Length: 374
Image 1 (cartoon, rainbow, N blue to C red):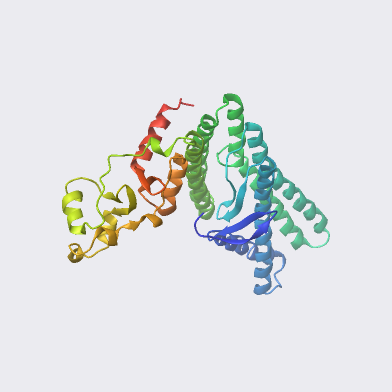
Image 2 (image 1 turned 135 degrees about the vertical axis):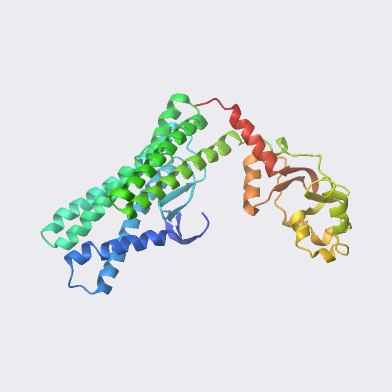
């Protein structure tokens, strides 16, 4: 996730925080500083209240972190690598590098998160009853943290993929249909429906109860809808396209250009005649680089006649390339890494083909249409 920074490592998992996390951190801190703490400790200074409130906010996020760590520990128990855990505005996410191998693994990896939140809720609830006779303020804080953890557990059990409840639902579809992609599609569709339901509740609360609560629920619904669709697309790419060779979408009808060609000649003789917008620069079958219309635009028009393709192209050493041994998920990964629209297919330094983003997308669309409707 872009905009994150590493804060440490727990149980071998890299822990990162997204910048959006600070919004919730401040919101929780503000809520406690001007709510429970102000009510029970009115004699405290503002500095003390805000300091204690910040500590409570940290405990809140530790609870979310423990929720995600439980997912990661069970995933690792099943041999699924976890690259790290990221905390962000809507909670946290365990970055598993592959899908579970079967529905049983999916179920236990998903359900352990809510169980952990409920366990933490019980611990804080016990703290509430113990602290009631000692300090009403501390008891109220513990009671609020108990309610928050129970709420986290209940919310994550909603059947909205990719929430934990949605993953539990996917495990049931998976066990019945024996097809991960179809199970994910069905869970994703239900997830979108649940997301719209949350957004609708947010709209009602905005007008009838609390504008802030309504806006927050609406944003959560929007995030869930987007995450549900994207999660299905990711599973589709990982499962359906895995093993499909890069050569399946590589084109050989590209036009090559010589390195000593001037930019003016390139534009007049190739671009304007409709030969394309991206050209491999090749000498004796060896790929020297790629030149695109975007590269040409970086050079002032007055210098086109005196500037060669070789001086303007992106050298082969700086290109993201794929080989005959790579599959389509690797192609998409290379394109995403540099936001490229084309990737050369090479063997050593020999150019075998050119893969365009539009061709990959077209192939994916056809494969999706070939899937049976869930």
